[in-house]
Length: 574
Image 1: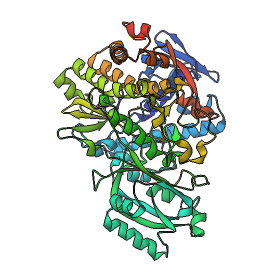
Image 2 (image 1 turned 45 degrees about the vertical axis):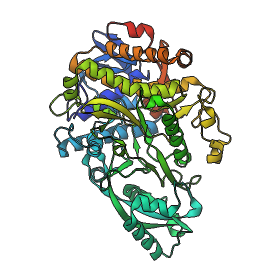
Image 3 (image 1 turned 90 degrees about the vertical axis):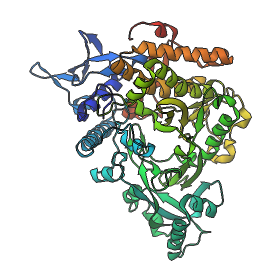
Image 4 (image 1 turned 180 degrees about the vertical axis):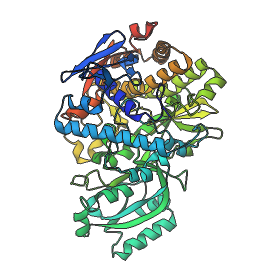
């Protein structure tokens, strides 16, 4: 099913338009507006497209409108390769980008040909996680999954919902770092059940391996297939690692591919496993330092939420804790390739009458041509439902930032919406180990922060902005506003305008009013002002620029701020 204004089965045009929209948005190519078109030149060739400019300068490009002026003077559909080859960067970066774009087209086309489903509105959470198959609405490489064959995609892609078992390794303990909430045996019995744990121990014993010297590590079966005979072969040959086989409960992939949900025990933990694939903007291995830090980070945030009564009353928020982590070869050549993080289950937090959905489901159109939430909007009314959604989606994240000083990566996959018959009730946040930031000087209770120096030696000489802490409040604002506003709620405001005729400026006026009222009611005007959320222009991350240039961890560009006072007072689209 498509995003607003998308036609199902036209993946190449969508990828082309998202590429051009990102290039224009990030200023990689400069265009001029002429007679309803954006026009630009690359490598001596003329290009054009039809586009509207939305909040924060986000471009919405019309279908089939990205064109190149041919040698005979006619406008024709622009080839992906012609655009990529003329961009900044090296031939290597161009080749990688084009391959990821083409793989995205291939997998989208496969989905369209092979997957047929009706309405997703009545699906349970596990099924919906795989069925929300549209991918990132901004990044053009939204389904790249480099290294996946079509067979891999059919077996391990979230869209097909095919259950599979985890592979298991026995690895010499000298290569392992782990943080578990219990002793090994008690942990594995709880996570695996007695039958599976006993089978694994028996299999490990058949190799002559003792539990004192070897520990268990789960492995995504694709990851085993991908590098058993390459990166892992030296350990296997030396007897430092042994593959035990596939055991235990069956799992299905979530939208992120590497995070898995248990289908045999629906309330069991989800497991996040590294996969050596690139999708959207990054390689989907595990950041080595973060795996054993994850439990301390999420326990810290969960503790703050529990101790602040406003998170139970005014800004209802639930934190899914990442309570256990194992990583192999943390500082070695296999770093980030073998490990696991266990995360609490979202459905286990629900009260009677509640249900939960991935937040980005709200951006999507169903097979009947109406938004996923259309029945809810009809039942409650557009403005009451929208206002409640914004309160539930924004205020918990904003209170965590402004009052407590912690910025989280609140994009559409990391946010879950708990509702009661469609009425938004509360927010669930997940996935903290690589995506929080704070400044010690801005923390409300700095003494409660984890002792990072005791968690990993790598933190001892770390510079600000290298890991979780910063000395720049702009970084905190940017993380929250990027993920929650620029690349998340802009999709909701766009859908409401397209499908219900609600002008986007009204949506963003409401967001601005909500934030201003929060500061007034909570006495947070000074702290909120320190973040500069209402500046006329703000920096946002340049995702496609990083993929092209790849010389720095992050690139940024300036965009007009939809929450700046003049922008919030406008009566027309920017």
